[in-house]
Length: 399
Image (cartoon, rainbow, N blue to C red; front, side, top):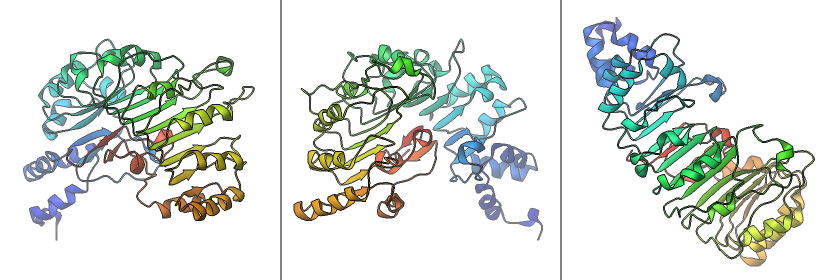
């Protein structure tokens, strides 16, 4: 049987497996019947974004029906045609390459028509004009320049991802984002300033990391990290992930943070600098009495004795992950097993010697790289992932 003789229902099923924009555009040009069927397939697409093969370790992309991706365009992009294919997008990524190879006026016209648009990824490297001003209903935003999105519409933003900006810029403009629920900062400069801004009463997830090599070792000497102090301004915060390479942390012991349940700290200890002292961390963890899931990764100075103290400090701990901490041994495992029996606890503990068990014990925790992850769930979509694998947006099932 020739493909032209297939029933339309079969063709629609076949087209449903095509997620690459160029392939869909070529199929559209075959004949009037295929044009009509491709339009039927693409009008159901919700998410359009750029696919970098190296981000996925050269694994062929496999996306659900409602996702379409484009590779870096080498030819000018026909934005008017693309807008015809995708009338009801919820999240779209305009990469710098997409923008440079497209007519910016056509993109603005398209965005103005996209009443369904809720999320936008737009890295524009301080262009004169950003597109955010034309998006009145945005709830999710990923960009590299926070000042470009501090307009009247920023009050609607629930998820903000800042890439390669200066962290101080966000702190200065924090008041523009009163309804944040998730904040991801991957910035050139870390949180080394005392935060004295508005309270984020709705913020549930924070994730702070620093761009590689953006802070010199000599700058770290004598510097203090204020990320945990910022978290004190988020009274309903439930989850946090922090990349830490400072020799001092600011801890306000007068405030307890009873909402925090999930905490990941990844250490990066530069040469010739003093690490944060254990006493500082003891004071920090006392602030989080309801912590259930804790990961302390790549901390060269963590010992078995520290593990024992943390188990006693944190009465609600059920998952404890110390991957890449070379001074933690089987003795810590033995201690926690005995501690569980004596006190009726069920702490699951993982170090380098048994870390291979963590995914079988917690099968719902994902390690897959995704730009968009289903579910506003830190444990499911973030806890086991390195910072470069964190999803840009977490979307609920209704989205």
